[in-house]
Image 1 (tube, rainbow, N blue to C red):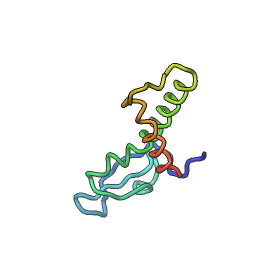
Image 2: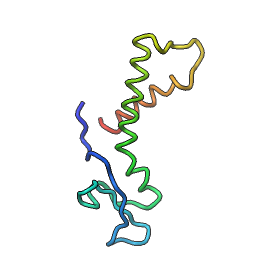
Image 3: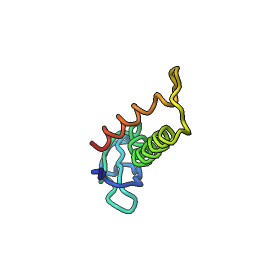
Length: 97
């Protein structure tokens, strides 16, 4: 699957044309509002999105390889760590359908 989003890393900058709670998410070395314009409370989570996406892809591969090669056994009882795999898969699909 090829990703259809602006590659990171992303940076946060106060919007010079906006109000006190207006922030821009942009690409390092690129346009300061290339990704999004948002409030301060949303800026950090949005700017972290590329890193979180990469971490989830790695976690998915780690868990699936562990199951496939027997390093991780599926327990009889629910295991919170393994129960996250469907959530990881859903989040990745939502981020890059």
